[in-house]
Amino acid sequence: MKLTKKTDFLIIGSGIAGLSYALKVAGHGKVCMITKANEDESNTKYAQGGIAAVMYHPDTYDKHIEDTLIAGDGICDENIVRMVVKEAPERIAELIKWGTKFDKTASGEYDLAKEGGHSAHRILHHKDNTGFEIERALLLSAHAHPNIEILDHYFAIDILTQHHLGLEVNSRTPDIACFGAYVLNLRTNEIETILAKNTLMATGGAGNVYSTTTNPSIASGDGIAMVYRAKGKVEGMEFYQFHPTSLFNPGERPSFLISEAVRGFGGILKTIDGEEFMHKYDIRKSLAPRDIVARAIDNEIKIRGDDYVYLDCRHLEKGAFVKHFPNIYQKCLDIGIDMMKDYTPVVPAAHYLCGGIKVDKNGRSNIKQLYAVGECSSTGLHGANRLASNSLLEAIVFAHHAAADAIQKIKEDPIENFISNNPLAKKNIPNWNAEGTSYPEEMVLLTQSLREVQAIMTNYVGIVRSNIRLQRAFDRLEILYKENEALYLKTTISPKLCELRNIINVAYIIIKQARNRKESVGLHYMMADFDLKIKHLLP
Ligand code: FAD
Ligand code: SIN
Image 1 (cartoon, rainbow, N blue to C red):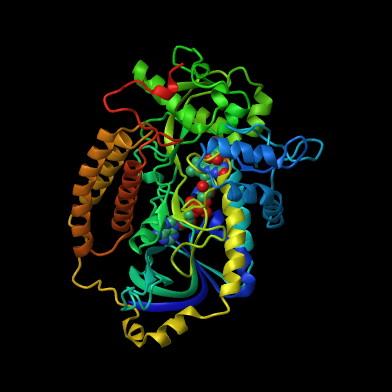
Image 2 (image 1 turned 30 degrees about the vertical axis):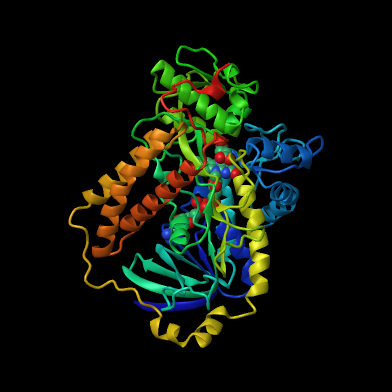
């Protein structure tokens, strides 16, 4: 194994979180960004609706704060909510400075959309592919910066802590610290070590823990699993957000999203016999917060025995609709649905992980020299349920804070300090024994296990849960965990194997934290065992 480089800032992940942090720290040292697929492949690239911010009167910070707190169902950190909402305009100005273009009205103001749970129009967007536009602009700016190196097709396997450097964490070295990461260079198939003065985890979400998700295949919870294995704190994992309206198109993975902004534009949910149903569940009807809408759809589908519900857009004005949603309109046309003439079939799909690596207001994890920003982190902003379009915002606000903190810290060299205080460590850099391993004889071992985890999570730890379901999930996952650990020890490292291991780790944490939370709150909805009535949903 090679020691490839030593850098000031190691960034794992090239979505909005990693890139905006990179652009901030790059003036203060060498930045090495690794990313496991093509550099633009990320959840960020697929974001449709946009980014929430208070831009104009009569909207106010207080309203955005209140909407976020209501969606979060009482367990947001109010100080963090205030910080994020109030800093939004400044951070958005930076995105614009870095080249992002948001749509404007004929009068030159930003064209603000509305989404579920928002009491005002406040979503800045670029048509219906806002994330693609942000990713494009940030990558362009990052490439132009001489201090930023982006290594694509580099897969982070684990972070490097004292443990890997030959020292157990003990009373003399009470704090776990991060000194970089072990990474697999997918072009050479070699494991390399990157040492860093500080490391940012920006690895995004974990939608692939479930059978149906809007997330691309990169979203396998790698960063969260790495930090958990290194004894970092992970919280809020029971709050997995299902987006109410992914396009029902069996066999397509990831599921194509029909943005909530379509409902903000006037789209109405109906059962397949054309009846509205959301008024039975919430006075905000189709624009209630996501947890409520997803549960209502799930309930209607289960009660009626249908596979989907409809989103009715036929009454909307075609010119304006197609201007705002050209990609959604075209995608549906491609599979034979004209949204202006036909009903659009939709189902909920796993979409966003509200919990993750626990961080403070500066994005610091409990592991020294390790920050986490973006969907892999848990900041306190989302509580039990994220308000739509608050996640891109969270990423840029926390990237800003983490960068400021890391720039201060970079003046010290924790690696040299650590090694000179612990001579044993020097001998051990690095020590990953990849010898004596082989490729799995049958890839089906991995693909089948992955399908099993996804089925367990979907059937037992999805939109509606119970003690019995969670116990079942736990028992079944344990078998898969043992099988996979055995395979991991005797098999040559590959992304598929590592991703499966990470998905199993993340599934385990979700189940464990779901079992610890007895009450229903936000996205964690527990029904009484054997009680098929959904209390919260009854009129
Ligand atoms: P990502 O953008 O997912 O980036 C993660 C990066 O980490 C990727 O580059 C990935 O390749 C890399 N990575 C992962 N594991 C490893 C590893 N082991 N080694 C190396 N690299 C690794 N939010 C909104 O606010 N508004 C929206 O309108 C919106 N729409 C959405 C629509 C869709 C279809 C989806 C899926 C999400 C949407 N979201 C939206 C959520 C939002 O896009 C994400 O939460 C946000 O983009 C996450 O950014 P991130 O930088 O944290 O992670
Ligand atoms: C959407 O466009 O509906 C996605 C918005 C989000 O996930 O925040």
